[in-house]
Amino acid sequence: MEVKKSKKKVILSQDYDNPADKDVEIPGADPKDDEDLPTCLMCVCLTGSVYCEDVSPDMTTVPALPQETAYLYACFNKITKITNKDFANIATLKRIDLSGNLISEIEDGAFSKLSHLEELTLAGNKLVKLPMLPANLLSLDVNHNLLKTKGVKANIFKKLIKLAYLYLGDNGLEAIPPLPESLRVVHLHNNNITSLTDDTFCKGNSTHYIRHNMQEVRLDGNPITLAQHPNSFICLRALPIGHYK
Picture 1 (cartoon, rainbow, N blue to C red):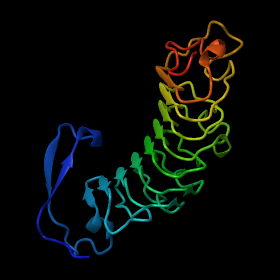
Picture 2 (cartoon, helix red, strand yellow; picture 1 turned 180 degrees about the vertical axis):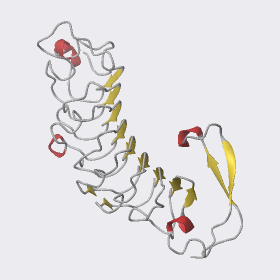
Picture 3 (cartoon, rainbow, N blue to C red; picture 1 turned 30 degrees about the vertical axis):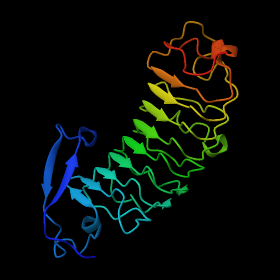
């Protein structure tokens, strides 16, 4: 790969934890300095962050990462699988964004050692099954995949007691899995959900229970009439978004 010596300009926004939008001048990569980590020749490596978005030639696997990596952005590539080895030695990861790839398989222990991982984005892939998820996860985005209820373990989210944002829209779910009390936002739009129970969001045996944390529930685009299930969301502070007539 030919490496140019000229400086490369990267625009960092507040979405990437930059306090203010600004241009950052990154010196051109030097092959002598990066012989052991070719990732930093085809991607942009900043202190703690690796940006591998829409890499050419095609990136089909998760790249090797510097040991101190906290943020990985590898969107819009052609990665097809996540293995147990991909993140095994990068315990510092806090955010992973692999949206817009071709991921159809994630080995069950791929994220199990990431005790600091807070945000995981896998939107726009081809997942039919979710792997085990790290306990400290705050946000999970798996919109626009091929998930059905059988590919989501019964208590996979219930165990995530810090999870606040869950995005499951545009999949093929037939039912809603048990949800943790910590959730603030859950998107379930454009699935195949046909029914709710009194325990889906609330506690069916309690008329005094209020789910204080929950701020937004999206159920639009499902073959269900929400008006037929009033006890399913009687504990919510706002009505779910969806079809009522």
